[in-house]
Length: 164
Image (tube, rainbow, N blue to C red; front, side, top):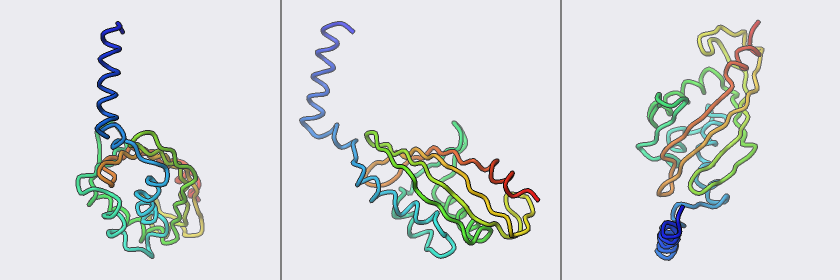
């Protein structure tokens, strides 16, 4: 980068900081917890919660959740998925283990566990086997709500743990 480009970049950054635009994109760890705790509360023992109210509190109506680069589900599909999960795994636990913040992105490492009843992900289970898996989520926050999530859960490990 030449000297003129460096000076221009510094001027843009100084303007953003002076106007508050740069800090508007940064949240603190405490803010991240306040914004996302309702989302994780909906995942933890969902059979005992008002999933819709918790998810709507944490996520914008336009929220998208990606499990890969192209396929996503919206907020309503996620709520429906959680209602179904609450029925098939009534003792589902979802515990946040780590939360890190970078600007307006929040990275969460969590553990999910439970004992499915009946069918689980197309596989019949006896109801006496449990699973415990790790999940990683990267949330993007804007205007006090989640607008985007990229996530990975180790469901293959859960299926291995549940095999008869």
